[in-house]
Image (cartoon, rainbow, N blue to C red; front, top):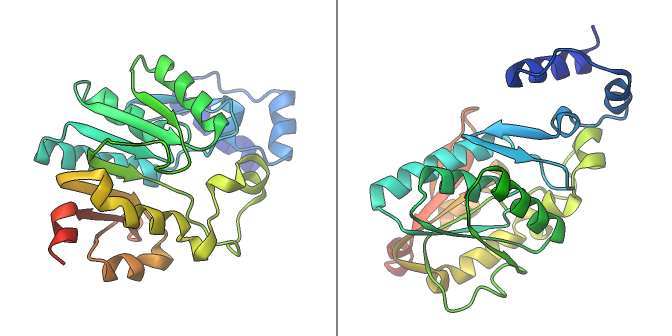
Length: 240
């Protein structure tokens, strides 16, 4: 059996969908369309994320990021969260389902991301504040206990499969300054956007981990033993 067909069947089995691949689906697979896009949604971290718009497909690394965030929120009793560069809305929606009493804002510059997030909020029956903004541009006079983000972080010369390059938005994948463009903006704004004892937690590209270590971020490895998550408390920033 063709490997792509086998993977689609396995994904359908995971969701309890009839384990057959029709002619149209086979044509989509030949075009390298991701199986998540063929099915139309993913289910992770207790949420269903519709993928009908051109947004980044959530990865398992981001699911790990969410579970780390849940632990931080519980430990520190955080009450407000900013999900920056929210894409499909995966992070903020998963956190809202876990903590229905906290204030969550979700922001992205891309109109498709905003539409997709709104749709996914309805699907998951939760409500967050949605803002179309170029990073912090329209987030004024508001501070948060937690800033969480999985921004674009790939370098322009990274080799990706056709399924990624042809079906996922490049602006959600690649970033200037060797993948560091958005992190530099976030770092500059931390003292303005975070409350006292607030925390920033980021998904990062392991190739740039030294940049974070030099700025006193603590690093957590992902399930594949890659240095994938960086976090720092605002009081660490103020004391250095």
